[in-house]
Each structure stands twice: as structure tokens, then as C-alpha cells.
Image (cartoon, rainbow, N blue to C red; front, side, top):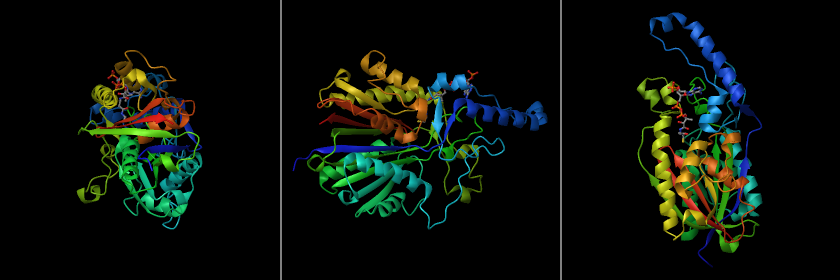
Amino acid sequence: MTNSVVISGSGLWNPPHSISNEELVDAYNAYATQFNQQNADEIESGSVTAKPLSSAEFIQKASGIRSRYCYMKDGVLDINRMRPAIPERSEEALSDQAEMAINAAKLALEAANKSADDIDVVIVSCAYTQRSYPALAIEVQEALGIQGFGFDMLVACSAATFALHRAYEMISAGTAKGVLVINPELTSPQVNYCDRDSHFIFGDVSTAMVVEHADTATSEHVFDILSTKAVTQYSNNIRSNFGYVSRANDVDPYGADKLFHQEGRKVFKEVCPMAAQHISEHLERHELTSADVKRWWLHQANINMNSLISKKLLGREATLEEAPIVLDRYANTASAGSIIAFNLHHKDLQAGDYGLLCSFGAGYSIGSLLVRKR
Ligand SMILES: CC(C)(COP(=O)(O)OP(=O)(O)OC[C@H]1O[C@@H](n2cnc3c(N)ncnc32)[C@H](O)[C@@H]1OP(=O)(O)O)[C@@H](O)C(=O)NCCC(=O)NCCS
């Protein structure tokens, strides 16, 4: 048996509902206008800040996002609610995020030409999990009939790549024969749809990948994982503070400071050079340069970030064929972005072509995998 570890299949599932920038902005602006009318006296006296209006043109120009999928559209556009209305499920029913995970996992298993018997580890890895325990991964494992073990991992935007790293290590070490890495990114409950600066950023999606030994891989599109590289550096610039300790803090667990918020400009300025340096160092390890990489499956937070990073790497703008953009349709889907890009843009690569998957985001965290088509 060789020691080669491969990605042998990927799956992508999106909810049936999507929300365009125009729909989102119309709802937000109606909400903001109503808020400003209802609080006119306080705004006049300076005790309340007026809500500024949003613009679909700004969103597209500043981020590249045109629309996003939403697990439950109901409620998001209701100006008296401004959050998704997701009915609570009983403890006996499959949980929402497990269902999202299973939808993508089945597609990844099919693409990899695998069944439940070929998998012995399930990692559910994403930016938020809907509960602490039992692990979503164990619920997914049970529903798919997989023997072995499963666990959940949270690494914000780098959850998917960091979980693929763990899968790579387990297969290399011989502690697993087949690993399902699943990213059910249910971000919408954590979006502050009342905040003009961030209401447009996120979308919901679910992705999955199968990682196994090259010797057992039988699918059509198999990618050797040549190596992995990860780095984290603490930053307060992207935060989501929702958590169980709020109950003991006697604070509003749903306050604006508990939802996603960021210093977008600072993130942009700090993360782009970090990501470019990280990728260059990863390639140097293999005595490769950026020119040797046929496809860049980059994190999908902001089109201008990706364009700056690829300019730093290539010395020119990358083409859409080289560095595909999916965030126009999907928005920022936390850790799933680079996996969506891979899922939609890998089948045309030829044997021997190099590709690089890279995530970057909250933490800060950056994770990459260098792969080569078999
Ligand atoms: C969030 C982000 C798109 C904002 O774009 P930006 O170009 O940095 O915009 P700024 O926040 O500097 O705002 C520019 C102006 O537009 C305004 N603006 C912000 N949101 C707006 C909106 N929805 N509609 C209209 N105007 C808006 C700002 O108030 C600001 O106005 P001012 O110049 O009068 O102060 C961008 O910073 C970004 O993507 N950063 C990367 C971080 C990231 O994506 N993180 C996700 C988690 S990984």
C-alpha cells in the first residue's frame, strides 16, 4: 500500500431559497426607515443613532456578492422580524444542520463511488454548530449507517480546510480508511440583518468531501493531497460572541455584539498579505511557484480580496478559469467557499495539474492543501 492520500469525491448542496441583493436591501431599507421614524425623537436628541440606508450597488462593488442562499427565507425579509424563522424540531427528529450535512455527504459519497461501509470517520466542521452535544457528526454517522466515530470541529472560515488536514493525517497514519469531511454552513441565524455593514455578507450551503488512500480510490476525479499547511494568529477583528456563558453574564444572548460583526477594512488589509505569504511558502516547500498552479480554489469572502491575493501571487489578475469566483451566487459561506469552488471547477483538470485549496478568515486562521490530479 502506498502512503498517498487522496480527495476522491465532493458534494455540494444548497437550500432551495435564495435572496438577491435587491430583495435584501429593500427589506433592510424599509426596516431602517421604520426604525428611524419610530425613534425620531431619540435620534433628534442624539440618544439613538439613525440607521443608515443600504445599497445593492455598494454591496456588489465592495464584495462581489449578488445573491445568497438561505436555509429559510421566511422571516429574513419581514421588517418586523429580520431573522430566519426556522421551526424548532423535536429531539427525535433529524436536526436541521445534520440534514444539511447528509444532503452534501450523500453527493460526495456518490462522486467518490463509496458507500457507508467504506467510511469510518465523520468530521462535521463548520463555523457554527446548532448545539453542543451530541455531536452533529455522530447524528450524521448514525443516519448514514457508518461504523466508527465522528466529531465536530469549529474553526470559523478555516473549518473545512483544517478538517481536511485532520482527515489527511488520519489516513496517512493508518487510523482511518475513509473520512467524510462535511461543512453544513448554516450561517443565517448568526447574521445581523439589522446591520447595514454586514447584512449582505453570508449565505447558507453544505459541502462535503471524501478522503481516502489512493489504493482504495475508484472514482473518476482523484486528487493526491501533496501536503497541508495551517497558521492561526489571534485577532479581534472578526467576532461572533454568541455562547452559553451569556446566560450567566445576565446579558442579552441575542444582542448585536453577540452576532457576527467585523472590522471589514482591517480584515481586508491584514488577511490578504498573510494569505499570499502563506500560499507562497506552501508552494516553496515543493519547489513550485504560483505559475505552476493550474487552479486556485480560494476562500470566498470578497472578490476584491481574491483579486488582490492572486495579484500578489501571480503579478497579474488571475482569470476566472484560474481562480474561480462563486461568491457572486453563494456569498460568503464561511468555511465552505473554497470547497464550493473546488466542487464546481475541478473536472476539467488534467493528470499532473496542480491545484491549491486555501481558506482565510476569522481567528485569524489560514489553511491550505496542495493537490495534484491523478
Ligand atoms: C465588508 C466589506 C465588503 C466592506 O467593504 P469596504 O469597501 O471595506 O467598505 P467600508 O466598510 O470601508 O465602507 C465604505 C463606505 O460604505 C458604507 N457602507 C457600508 N456598508 C454599506 C451598505 N451595505 N450599503 C451602502 N453603503 C455601505 C460605509 O458606511 C462607508 O461609508 P463612509 O465612507 O461614508 O464611512 C469589506 O471590508 C470586506 O469584505 N472585508 C473583508 C472581510 C470579510 O469579508 N470578512 C468576512 C469574514 S471572513
